Image (cartoon, rainbow, N blue to C red; front, side, top):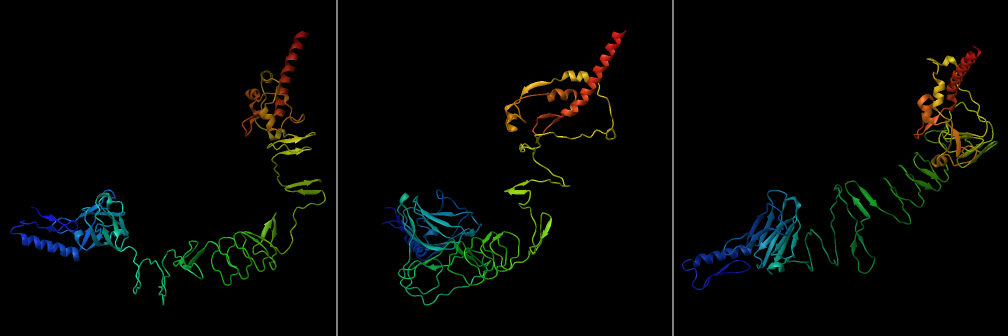
Length: 456
């Protein structure tokens, strides 16, 4: 009958008649395996993280020394940071095992323990030690849990690192170490009730950074505050402030300001009781103003009326400055079309034409032939044109009109044609007079030649 092995420690159970001559050696080996299981310690060095589906595996071998048979295991990664959580599985899946396991992986990585293909695993935080219980339920039934679970001691006299959950009947003293430099977020702790069952809690809207000495409060509601505030205040302040405010104020102030205000940003609505001058003088419409005197601005008066942003002047206006208008109306409202002038009466103007202002003067040749290539036409303006200029009014804009075609004129006298910003061509009708004058010259010459022939 062959020997068998225990499920949990893999110790050989010698069958009757087996191990003749070597029974003592086998027994000594079993004692060694029991010794390492009871009080052995070892290190498991991982070179890769593995995965949940393909983890690193440690097997308790039958009849020979194995790392995971020992009582204490420290898991390390001497090659360096593995770059993620490491996965470690115990085999075989029918072995029940209690073992202390410490996670000493480099790079502060976590360690996940498993057995078989079970989904109940145990994750050990970096630097922590757990008493892991491998259930040995086989296959997908396998479980790995923290055998200690939640400790519930009746008394504790020691230093505690980690989390405590429960009720302390009486704490005679608490020692708190000062931390004035760490760049981290610290949340103050509050008691959640004045009487009855009480507990400790924090508020994520209230926190402190020891490194920057900054206390952040998202909202404050109080019946009153006495003391100095040093630093920036972002948000709304409703209520009275008595004392000095040093720093920039961005936003509106509604109410009375008693004291001096230095700075320029923002606006203040209310009474400034003692402010008599601006710290820096400003210029308003070309006039220097520092607050110590009055300035004169355009207001409604004789011949002048002001309505919103429109100023009406019922009197002569003279200026030596340059003036620019978008559109201009004389005796009629402006059309609103950029660059257009409308007038209900004569426009009298003279164009520069002095010979002393001109050079390279030449006669327009073949004027009559050029005139013959253009035609005076009747036409209807397009709907686009009518809408652009405000529609037909029977005075400035009429649907049916007469004139010349700019493209025809451009072929013979391009100097009088221009293209506007909107891409459409326009004519300088007054300049066409020169072409007409020369065509009359040519007609006159032809008439004179005919008269001479008739006389002969």
